[in-house]
Amino acid sequence: MSSTQRSGSSGTPALRVVSTANAPAAIGPYSQAVVANGFVFCSGQIPLDPKTVEVVLGGVEEQTRQVLISLQAVLEAAGSDLEHVAKTLVFLKDMNSFAAMNQVYEEYFFAPQAGARCCRGRAAA
Image (cartoon, rainbow, N blue to C red; front, side, top):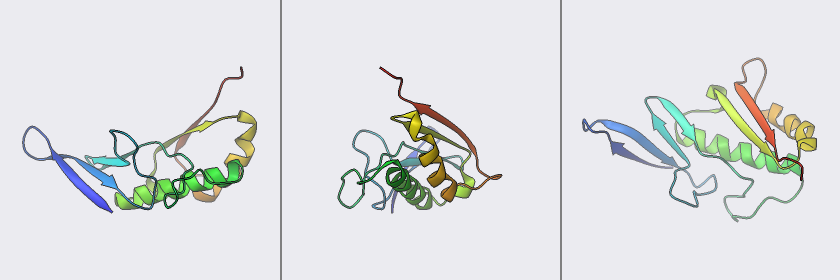
């Protein structure tokens, strides 16, 4: 786990940048997560194995599982966990995969404590 702090204008820490080797590294000018005023803001996750940096093989179930494992690792590096997630946003290539994604999602987020969720599919061509 790696963590750096950026100071606000008053010299007090405004943001704590979080990174972990247990999730895919950021591939651009952004962080895996930042902590601000006690809230953790996570960047989006894609189904990459953090060790091989390859998309996991299999279907939507395996890819969903990898995304949630990576999210869990980032949250833990930030000092939090899945039980404290307020909202998730899920992007699916095909909304016909919703049931398969949801089955794996329920292994990580339990009702009725699960936070809010929005799921979007790519528009049909």
